Length: 240
Image 1 (tube, helix red, strand yellow):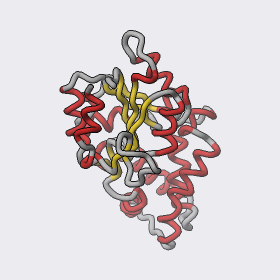
Image 2 (cartoon, rainbow, N blue to C red):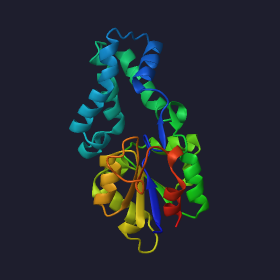
Image 3 (tube, rainbow, N blue to C red):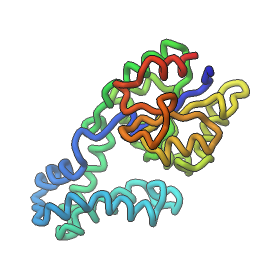
Image 4 (cartoon, helix red, strand yellow):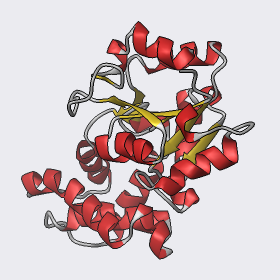
């Protein structure tokens, strides 16, 4: 069928980290004289700190009125502190350095195959947007990476005050950015998370395509391993 609106996830779908965050964390910390003795714990700590912060203050703090910069300060500092680093002014400086760094395209790279798909959709006259569980740095990253011009709109969950897989964020995209009387069934969301992207879209009445090495038992009409394998059939279906 012909889709009137096509949206993409950002992190892991359109762009990804150039290297694991803790590698860059350690590199920046060394600039401020911080030595990490327990490196094994340190490299395990980022995911633990991220999950703990998201549980206490969901959606980068938006749901509990915590500013997103404070949310990230908590994540970064706990990644270090839980590996035995003292909480001191140098750690504060390291944390702010990293928050600003990850707000640029310097630590991100475009996922291989993405631009070819975006170019095809744009040339086909499709309306394209982004729905991402992300903080306000998203716009600047896209601008610096040279991707922003492909998208008519960008929804970052922090500013939207709702997040995937919640129906509200898909509803927001439809209500604010669809033209004419677009129905959910006329929309398609593409992302790498089965729960947040695929199920979130399906439960909102949208169509969805999962781009992930794991198919989660989906068939080839709504799954592919990566954008380099985003075959002609999937693209034709989007361009109808």
